[in-house]
Image (cartoon, rainbow, N blue to C red):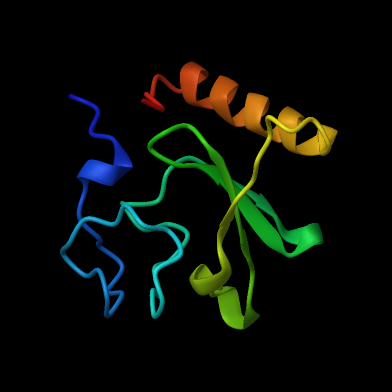
Length: 109
């Protein structure tokens, strides 16, 4: 079976914005994609912090705040600048997500 990157898949979670379409913009207004949508890249749920971390198609680290009932506030999803060196935890999370993608045999490119 050939691996298909998430940004080349179509939405399968019935989001009214993306259903049956690709999703490459993670902070699009009105997006209601589930964190388990086929378009969602490898993701780390950090429920104790009320958010999730993930890598986009450019391997940049993003975070999205959690909302009630298992929904996500995609309108406020934000790319995290890990190159600044200010947030050591973000660097570790980015490294771990990259490592997990490698171990699972998925590409982040």
